[in-house]
Image (cartoon, rainbow, N blue to C red; front, side, top):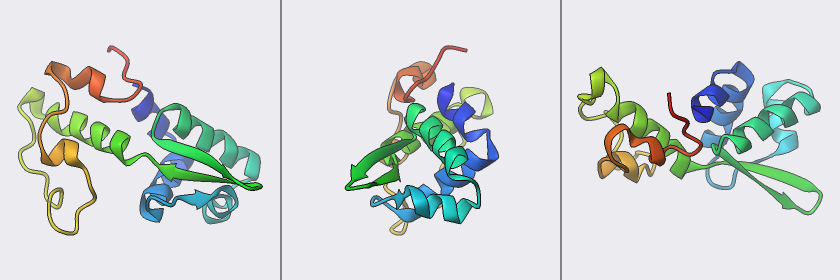
Length: 128
């Protein structure tokens, strides 16, 4: 599964965490480089992996490239993990998911987003 593989690397996980915290407006590539304390080419590689895995988007604004978390993809990934934990029995209610201060993750709050295994619900999902 590309989404989980992308997050298995510490710099990509840190970058994704930054993008989630930045909100829908995302962050400029230079801001990400500065926040992560890694080289620009390394950051570019890791951000490209997040985009390729469907966890982030990139857009050009003049001479700057901005990256943003794809909240729908994040919701599908979290939903997939919750639905498939405990041998497929589900994990029950996820604390903080659907409260008034929660992120907008309708896939979790409203139930499953696909059939058994939720394979099509996760962007880039590959059969095990």
